[in-house]
Length: 637
Image 1: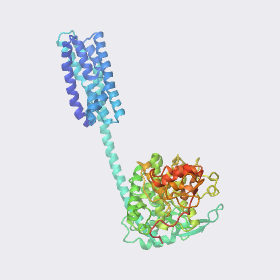
Image 2: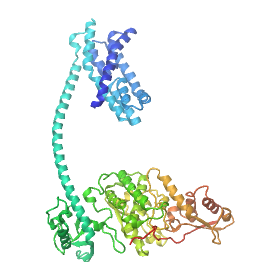
Image 3: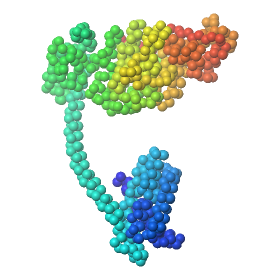
Image 4: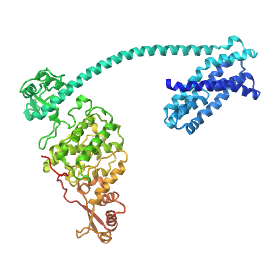
């Protein structure tokens, strides 16, 4: 408020001084009584009805004079409150300070100024103008202390029968007393707050120093854990899991004795000073404290024991090829320490995380994706710096709350995450090898997002398809999707609250599963999403939809599929004609009509589809085999 007062005080002094000087003289020009002129001057220049109420007894004004002055302030002040915000906007749209100053000086009563300022803020979203108006008006109010005695004294010297004792009315004395008390209180509490702030600052500095020490220790242990993960090969062990599950498979584990031996030889002079001098067992314990190492056998502390099993976070989050599974989300390696993963800068900010992740994805695609978006160099990607930076960035997903996203932002976010998760897994373990691997491939690997785990199947069928059963569900396989349910339990699964409804079928042309028959890889944003999905749908359908005659030859022009055919066959991708056909319509004709809206209106494909729909009595969709071979120039060994 101090900087606001820098221009509010001079303006208020000038305005009030001019009003007190000119208004009584203007009143005399119109033959108004001197006391009425003073009341009008005080009410208009200082603080409306309050100023009139304070001055009236001081100059012994009549009830009629007081009533006229009050009515003037109420009438003109109310009119100003309703109209002057628009005037201020017209003249001072680019300067909120000037707009606020204008409102604070032009409107009479305090309540009226506050009303005008709030109207301006709500109408134009400008809080600065409201604050300037308030400060300007309060500054005018303070001048009441000097103006009332001065006006009363002027009337006394003028021989208007004013008593000296009434020159300073009780109201004014009370106003000055309360103002002084408030100022003293503000000064006292400001001083106390300054002392408190000093204590808090010292405490914060101590905490920052401790945090700095912790960060240094964590960085050293992080580097140590990375080296250990590369040096030691984990194993899967069957162990006794209690009478209810006597035989439990513990995946990606190391025993305490193996970890201790490695730490004893590896944690040498190359280890940072913050951990130097610690025994191997102590280092193991510290790694458990930071979540770099966890117990797989219910041990609360690290023990140098070949019978105690532990799991490195690096091993738990590394994608593993079929038939093995990955115990933890792929992005949970370091999130526990960093409060959300990544570098922690964007923790909790969904928009910032989405933008940062998209930037990392674009860097990956720029370096390793072909220009048409259909071929990825996965082998080169896996060893690249851009890939490591992307994997680190995915840790920030753990703190994202999808509830804060708009519908378009949510769709774009999950499309990008789905495609990036497929690329992440494919770069590490390769494409699915065979039917059974593919059957579980899109459900085995997961990212943690906002405290919940999401696989590709969860994102596609749960979030983007309205929590519908997938193409590999029993109901879908037997042609009765209603027999199966979606990935989320609507009553108990927290992920169900993020389901996008209604479903936009065009998402199928944006999801890329890593096969050659998939659409090209793109990235998406909430802003302009409709146009982006329209472009993806048009590009896919233009090259995929083929109108076929009854003799099974492909139509070459609009005339070849015209009116006389009783039945027209249209070849479309399995995405449209088999797996997700119900997303596009209830019948083949309805599905084709939906697809026709995605085609370029003046293109050949659109004309052929329109002719087929108009000329045939029956339309049938057929789907060729899906090419599951990898959409990459090289495979990953």
